[in-house]
Length: 112
Image 1 (cartoon, rainbow, N blue to C red):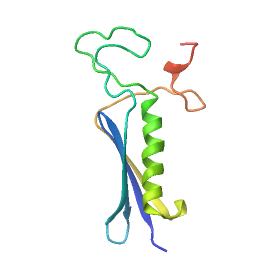
Image 2: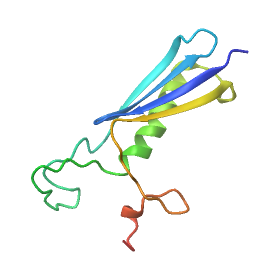
Image 3: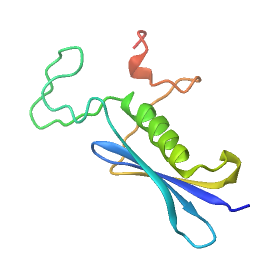
Image 4: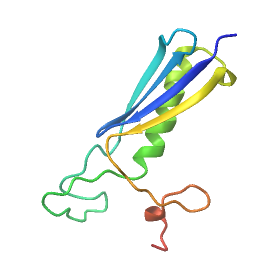
């Protein structure tokens, strides 16, 4: 049974997942998922104005795009999840996203 690696690249506007066969490095499937909020330059979703020169992304776009890009790549690859033996993540920049114990971003918690 062939073995595969899964890589996910988080960019400015989307996350892209790719699945490669370990034995020869060939790409067998990929899927791109755009961020629903794209890059926010003027207003936050609640209407708060963003200061000039700031470019923000919605924290819930990351887990959404991760799940959807991986699901899409797995569906296109038609392999068993158990065949994936490696995982790699890549980001355009350094985005720090504090999480609670459930893995949820603190910024969506009403307490904050």
